[in-house]
Length: 450
Image (tube, rainbow, N blue to C red):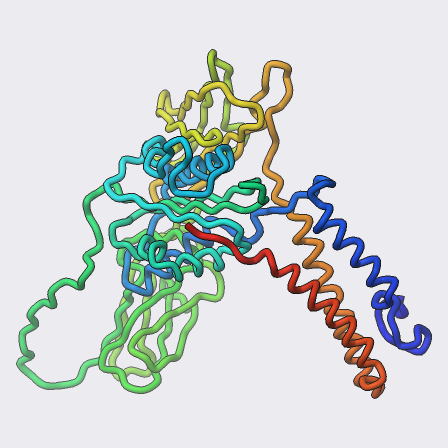
């Protein structure tokens, strides 16, 4: 095995896996997967690292930089986003407005979301959540949506499919607000503070996030705060119910504490203490962590054929959940009857995917596909679960990493044996081949937004 991977005397200092024959085999495999993959039925697209939770987190991180409220996920907006994405695939268009007069607002209204303010961002062809949000923030119109004070809620959908002859990942981001309350564009008037009757110095510390009595849906959330009248470097110690969970040292007026592990579900009483202060200087807040979406599995769902369509009955053990069902580009809000959620849907077209979208009162959202619970007249299942395996990208990435490791081993051995000059021509050829492969692999990491 050593002769295959490591240069040595037995293989004439040329591992078998980096010889011309091996490179020819690699080239043939990559050609087959990348060029002929479509003819062989190899899927070219997957959800990759684009996840709606990441997009929401990154979006809220951008809003936080400007002091804006965090957007809470809403299942009806998520349903509307999914329906819009499916509609673009079905009708083959790439625009905010469809060829048959479709508008973003019709999908939002169809989901049962009664908005006062609403907006939409679209993206396609990206490979990561970071890439999507960075591109939106670099575009004035998309940035305006992300940083708008008019919005309180958000919905995200990612769908894979063929659009205008190209296999891509579609991302739909929808914003909404069902009230007329908006974040002010300018800071409120500074209150008049009376002059103190005595002169002196005081130190203080304040926790600015989370707010007292708030519910946090991100278990990895940081504790943020600020200090007053503190000069130079200082140390803050953080307690949870009188138990030390960590500390930090900084020299700015603002501090940010990141816990080594996620906060557990449930109530937390956090105290931040300014260490080495002459007097006890601390601040406390109580907040709750709730990051668990409504729990639904196949045993909680009943599907009954009822002409001309179907009735879906869902049992969700959760306080105030919001449940919708998305069938292709159509959304069906539920009604609550006899302690069960019921949805009446029309007759399904073959190949249509059916997804339950449910969220709790804090915005934790679950998407659960139930396509395989529906059967057509001949007893055949309409469809199965989404296949998110991207064989092409996986093969490319594996080869890039594998050849890089072999090259690294070869360079280290040559350096130790003093063979760099003698083998530089061979190293250069393999390095250029690897570089071309790397460029080809990274070629799909760009996308389009509108």
